[in-house]
Length: 535
Image (cartoon, rainbow, N blue to C red):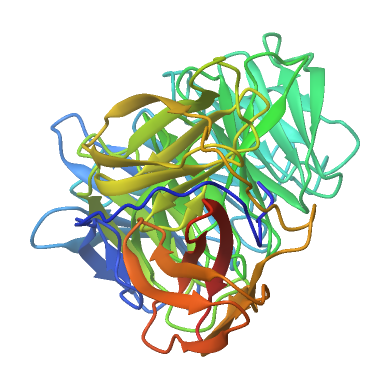
């Protein structure tokens, strides 16, 4: 919704005591609702991909790609590294697990290049290198599996032999067999697999290929999703496969959520970034949470119970330097049965976390004329104390995801009495509102600046230290008052015609305020929206 610098709405006095219970993070802290369980740096120069292994006895393990090989850790006290499988030297190494074997690829060259197969069955003893597959490729950027099934297949993307996606059957881990290749003629950087469908991130094409792999020997392109961003990097889908979270490998690009329920009408429904100076590197969706490795912003946890209204509910920042660039957290695997999250920070190594935050609430509603019932899409709806402006569609409908807590919904429209609605939202609550605004039926003239000369002025409309109040009419008396976004009056004064004065605002908080002029004895009203910013 376009910000309105000056808005004319009738005013009825309102003094409202507002108490706010906030679950929001404090600025400057490096963690919120995400608890660090273990951090370990084995002394390698770089780290990258991470994955998990859950043994038949219930013991959980973390696997981490390091510059010189793959490290395996037991996630219990005493915490320890149980094994290390050397491999070609590379800044990035990616891992997945199928059954009781780990499959590892890298773009590094040298002894041992290819897809390494690591046998995890000896754990908690020492894992061993079972074999290295190199029949059809020796280097690959990433390896994936279908996390929603027990399919004995792995998918190796961005190989140096084809640049495409190699599909391998690993039913016999000691003898992987290639059963197909998606080879479009351009580079596929990463992929996400759901049953008979593969989503391939065509990094250099700025597209996402959606591919039918029901016959892996003959993959067929279904459609292509044009990426509005740059360097299409990675993606993940919701459990119902109706939505897809897409990440771009370019600073300044947000993560984007698309509705893919109808492949003939794919459309973007939401965006998210913790800091536009950085980038969302890899998204992982687990149930109604999206776990994001966000480079220099660490791990971020989003509630996507409604993917069109994502809400950040937790984070842990692993990087202490300036935001932006290819530093910080590479990966954040959340698929352990215990719910613990395994992260690989490029420099600091292994992180293991537990998310312990609340789930989000959401409000849905519409703004309508109380008499005709017609929608009022031109209305201004604000959530406070966040000072967020809600987007209204052409039917006057809106939606907003929020943390549990107390809020005020303030709704204004030209020619209508404003409405203030206190909200108290609980975890996972979905509240539906029908906001009915009553037309203002007061008699007498109402000035509309822009349509006729204003009787009073407020300037500037964006201010810091002071704001000037002017009464342009030479006679008469006006009551002038300022209220904050919650309807709480913070200043009032009687003015006479021709008077003007400067109002100091040093002790005002940054945010939106409304200035009301009321002509005494004539029932004429003016309202100005103004914004205070820090000097």
